[in-house]
Length: 455
Length: 111
Image 1 (cartoon, one colour):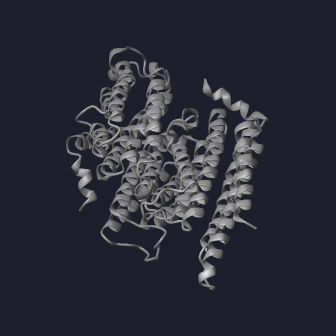
Image 2: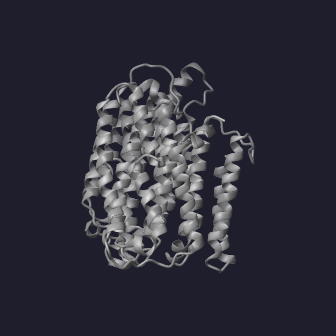
Image 3: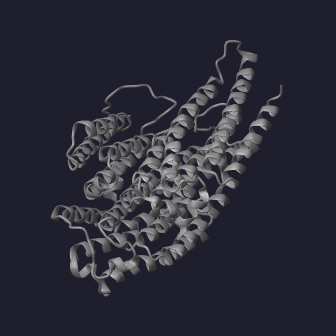
């Protein structure tokens, strides 16, 4: 509850600071401080400290998993604000409002990680999405940004309609909006249809194939800083919503939806990875790679067991931190194509090395957090005991992903070129180094994060 | 009237909305179709709410079962209004730059 209340309040505070404070670079520090406070209060809620005692029974239920997920999202946002604050200032005229919208998104994250009621799922998804439509189009003069924002908005509200239809059908059969469902009886047709519609709507939100088609255009068209936020924090929050719903429903669904999710996983992995191979623009390649990573996270939705939940947490941390790191460097570049990376190792050896670590983590190479994230996903899948073929497909596509990630590394180290990079401060470098250290530590000792789930 | 009439009507409305979103090219008409989908859902929720209430009243006359369906409708209305707010301003922003609300424009983004 702390996260939801405080992030909404901080959002309003940021909006007002836009009126009273005119120093553009001050907003970044205010936002970072507010995020730090948010993080502290979110963690302290895990220890039983709550700001306001409101009865949210039947609506929200706060447990370790959701709170840890919040912490990961808030921490990633903190890193994101610290790394990309300069670039946020450059987009549009209203910097403070951009930060306010980011806080409202975090409020939505707080809701979707802890809901127990379909009403809260709906509200959470909307609070998460509506600020993003605005952020996508925040560069008002940029035609590409406009188009991306319109496309995102139309697709997003369309999927909301589908989500609501699914909820209505579930309500019709069960007579309640609670996601928990007792009994192992057979699904009625209406209920099955409702679940499939919910599944489709959430697949839209996390951009799983075949509902991914908006993703590349939107991620490519939006300002690079906000793509970074959309592709990381918002996407993993979508998965938190997904797994909560399916965890509560395992009793009634049984194996009936397995085949459906299996098909979606294979399609997502295949489409994301195979299309990413042919991309020339690194920004667009990362958009496709985010679809591919979503395919991997779908394994958790398929397996829905303890390993899957641990894996999803680890995946969220690994994926968010690496992608935010890469985007922070990418946003400083003039040329976002593959050639733009040529010769980065010569002019900025430290940054090139750190970006290499981030790409290795995304590819899932051992000693980085990405490796254990993928490992947990596949282990959860093996634990379920059926559809082992999917694990093989997952490993094969992970191998494919190495190809396009390494193309960037190759461009940085083995090709010559004049790199055009906005000036970087030493603080930026140290922060990037810190993120890389976290990734490596999680890659060596993933329990550093996962033990928080139990103590 | 049997509940099936209401369900059929709202499913038909919903399908009109879905088909409209997928086939029309004018951003505002697409947007209206989305609203149609949401209102179809509203109708269905109210019908189900009444149905559950009717079933419960048979055994307990003062039952409030099913009231949550109608409450949900209010939330949908509020959120839809917020969405309209953002959506129309995005469309206006688009119109200022391209002098058109045709979504065929969007295909340029692919290259």
